[in-house]
Image (cartoon, rainbow over all chains, first blue to last red; front, side, top):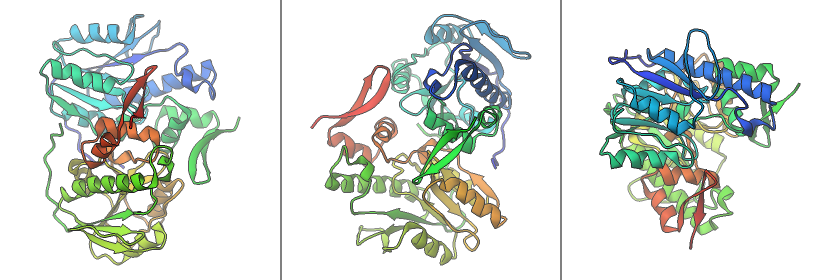
Length: 218
Length: 218
């Protein structure tokens, strides 16, 4: 149903996708056991990789623990998200796209639109003050500071370094999957592996008193 | 921070904005009394009108009760949302943009992007299965069916009439303001009247245990 032309990247961009393979997405523990959450996180990672690959970016998965994935470069860094990402960005000579692994609605079109926006840094805000993706053209002058109201922190960090800012406007990149309510978005708008995972695990939409939720039949 | 060129509309489009002036937004009753909710709803309407006006659309506010607004055409229709909108669409000879009055993050760029998408109908999905805006090119062959999982209903209605579908991808049009948590989005990303209303009413962001919420100091 998308219908936009996809410009081809004119400079190399390396996309880095932080990933936690062990015991991820604990806010979904009420619905999914640890083994299922690990499979679900990997399915979401699949969807993000598919979207990013469609733009022509090189991809690196930055994993918090041992993880291998055929056909994809994986770097293991057990430190915190900010430390590992900031070292990654600082050591890159090319622009870096940081994109979270829990954005299964992402499409090549949405990622590409972000990469085409002007700005020394371009942010894709997440719901609730987060930052779901950052395209860092100014790799020497920007650092990330995740957790809490990270979007506002990132805007401030860019401002302090005199960097120009672009904002992505995409609900697909805005929608990170953390909680039960977020699964509604995936069951409505998802088309990839993680939606199939949910459906094959017995999840479906439930409309009750005009509100849309999810239910699981096992 | 937006940086996209704004194509000019090449055909007349009439934008209709449903509006409930009396006792709106009752899910915010925990934070705002009725008089405040009415002022807040009007401030959000202001922001939507500003965004839509920036695209060159004609505008009609479709109000559930007596309401006047200098410089804006207002039609009062006390019937339900679906009945009044479907009569409005069926009687139009031009394409109709239905856009909700509670989308204060809307910008001319986001609305314009929607109007440029291909499709006999173009939907801007709302969070939780809703439909925040619909651009109806096929005014003879489409009708709305709001409430519940309206997005899926609208996709089905279009399919049953053999209409082609476009999907807007904008977090600004995806974010409708209904509940306390939604005010976080407005205080972070809003720039218009409704953000000013919240701030002048004592609302601000509160970061606690890594989560972002709102607090009110009166």
